[in-house]
Amino acid sequence: PSRAPEEALRAKVKSEIRYRLRQVRKALPAEARAERSARIHERLFARPEWQRARCVLLFASMRAEVDTVAMERRARAEGKVVALSLIHI
Image (cartoon, rainbow, N blue to C red; front, side, top):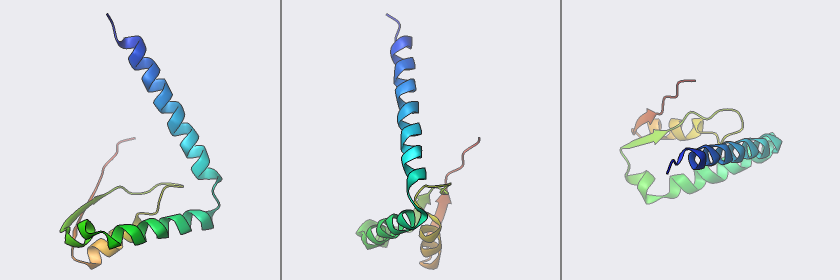
């Protein structure tokens, strides 16, 4: 039996979830996004995995996503190699 209808439904559901999450992020005030990013940074930098890492993989944040610029700056300041993902749009 073909799984195409099931896969199409799964893709549609994923697309809808992503859309809704983008809408929620857009609705957050800038100060709330900055505060949440700061909390994420604090937790990340405290992790032993971060402290031991010689190389970190990051994504370049866009629009209302968590700010990754501070992560990149800190990693470079600590002498870590930084790898950024590449997305073709």
